[in-house]
Amino acid sequence: MTGLIAASLLFLGIHLAVSGTTLRDRLTGVIGEKLYVPLFALASLVAVVWMCIAYGHARADDLLLFDCGQSFRNTGIIWLALAFVLFVPGVTRGNPTSAGQTGARIDGVLRITRHPFLCAVMLWSAFHLIGTGTLASAIFFGTFLVVAVIGTRAIDGKVRRKRPDQWRQIVAETSILPFAAIIQGRNRFVAREYFDWRLALAVAIYAAILYFHADLFGVVAGPVG
Image (cartoon, rainbow, N blue to C red; front, side, top):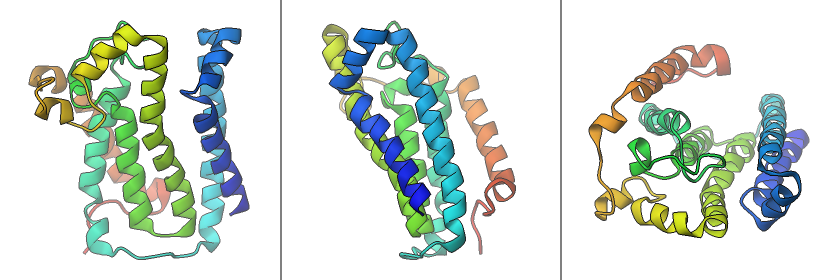
């Protein structure tokens, strides 16, 4: 468990102390955006791999904190379907809030939320945290949940500081909460932009994850009687 805590603290520190903060601005001012982005990605990857390995070891003598029941766990197929139909379109489309993608248009899944990847992580991590109910899961999935929630604000703050004119347009047309901008009349859902190959890919990947979940993670995914 000590290794999992250390790895999680590293991942938290990387994202809360650096990503989206004024420290990031100073670092990019010294080494440049093109060098900062891959270095930050590498550091994040190292922390995630360490977390995954440590979580696997911690599960051997894990402590059950609560049991939400099988009925709740059976709803996971819905939670994760929603996560995948945000995640895949989100990472395969340019996003004006991302580094190096300032010219990306606000369309497709970005009309639903300007942070589709982070919203997907919130859904994925929240379900697994509640559905598993163990100490190791609370640390592992809770870390991703905290980073995803705070990350939306951190990214917004970065864009607001560095590109104030573009930020005003982005915030006027989008929302963090899925569908909020559409409900408020600040944007509209365009079916042809969303129902494309990205959604088909999301469904295919989700189906594969469901099928191989037991082999990959040792837990059967989907409703259980």
